[in-house]
Image 1 (tube, rainbow, N blue to C red):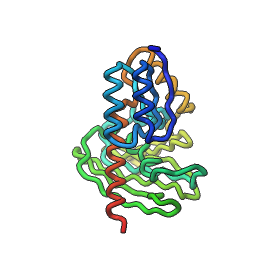
Image 2 (cartoon, rainbow, N blue to C red; image 1 turned 135 degrees about the vertical axis):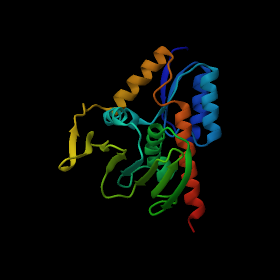
Image 3 (tube, rainbow, N blue to C red; image 1 turned 120 degrees about the vertical axis):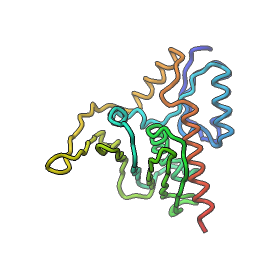
Image 4 (cartoon, rainbow, N blue to C red; image 1 turned 90 degrees about the vertical axis):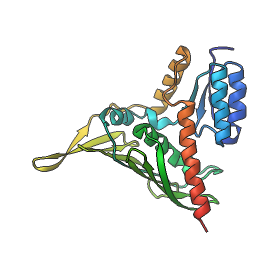
Length: 247
């Protein structure tokens, strides 16, 4: 029935089949990331959402982290971005590499913040505990001159989710995990730091509330199918570079 909403959390390979079947019934869909297993599947989901006038939101949950709101409000012209996302080895089945598993969170955020076409990508990755890359680094250069350096690992002894953004007048350091942030600027006495007040909240709650609101109003979600597909496209490019350069 029209107006129904659902969260789809099935194996990525089934996203297209399940998502299209639901939207055929007029159901609005919050799809867990990544949007799909391939760009063809992603395009099919986006087209189906248009055809059936259904909201298709992609579950890039960090976009709803309170520190992201602070970051977006403080940015003017990012020139260099550094992101680290590290976690211990997961006690779950692994059918994808760390780029599609973890790094894609930061890729989606960086694409959103920079808002410029990608010019070039360099990447390295190593498989340690699984058959796919478990640790990876990517350097992304954008047409507007911004450069992003992104590191992800799922074999780290510690858990870390941090991003630093440098621009002409300052740099911002944010911790998604602790929901804390600082702004560093030049002062007469050197570099000064201002701790930013963050109103902590649960990103999942905010994500679900945003989805319900968009579905009720028929509005474009904060993370659209197109944005999810752009993040997938970049993640697949990085994965391909790693796979073709690994002996």
